[in-house]
Length: 290
Image (cartoon, rainbow, N blue to C red; front, side):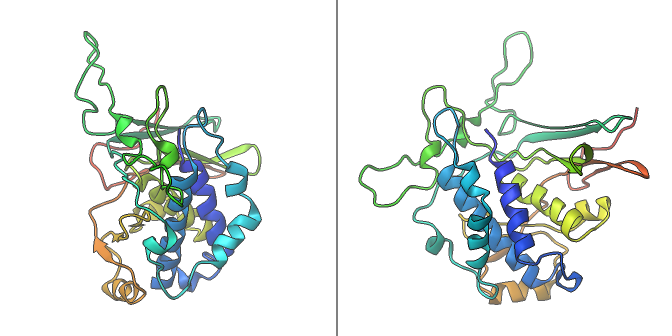
C-alpha cells in the first residue's frame, strides 16, 4: 500500500500554513528549502510511525490529515534551525526501498486522465522470471521494516507496523497523483520513480505548480532537495546556489550534493489545450501524442 497520498497532502497543507508560495521573494531561498526539508522530516516520521498494510492495521488517516494536527506540526517547525532527526524520533528504521520504478501519465482528448506507477523494486526485481513468459518477479519484500519491534521498548519503533507477516503487503512510497481543477475537471496527472524520493519529488512538483505558480516544464526541471528523517542528511541537486547551501549548513543541515532525483512524467489539461512534459533527468522517457 502506498503512503504517498497521505504524505503529499500533509506536505502541501503544512507548507501552505507556513506561507510557502505567498511571497515570491522566498522562492528557492535557503529559508524556503529549510522549511520544506523540515516538513519532509516530520512527514516521514508519521509515515514510518503510523502507516502499514490496512489489512493488518487501521491507519489513522483522519488524524494525520486533521487541520489541528497539521497546524501543530507547522508551529513546531523552527524557521531558523534544523532539528536533529534523533530529537524528532526515538529509533532509526531500516529503510531499504528500491528505486527501479516506472511511471506513466495519460490524458485523452476528453481530458480523462490516468496516473500509473509500477515497481519491481530493485533492478530486474528478484532476478527471477515466470517460466515461459519473461515477466520479472519483484523483490518488494525488501520494503518491509528490517528491524522488528523489541518487546518492552518504552517508545514505538519507527516502522514497527511494517514488519513482515504472512500475506502482508509492504509499505510503498509510490505517489501517482491526479489534481482536479474544481471538483470534476482533471487538471494534472503525474508521478515519478525514485523509492522514498518519489514522495519528495512529487511534492516539489506540486509546490512549484500550485504554490509558486511555475509553468509545467519549469516546475519539473527545477532543482530538488530530499530528506527522509534517517539518515539525517539533506540531499540537494546541482543548480542550488553555493550561497544557499552555505546558509542551509549554518542552519544545521548536513548538506550533500546528489545525482538527479526522480523522473517526473506529467500531462496537463488546460483551457489552452493538452500539455505534457517528460523529466530530462533520466534517459528513456518522453512525451507522445496519438
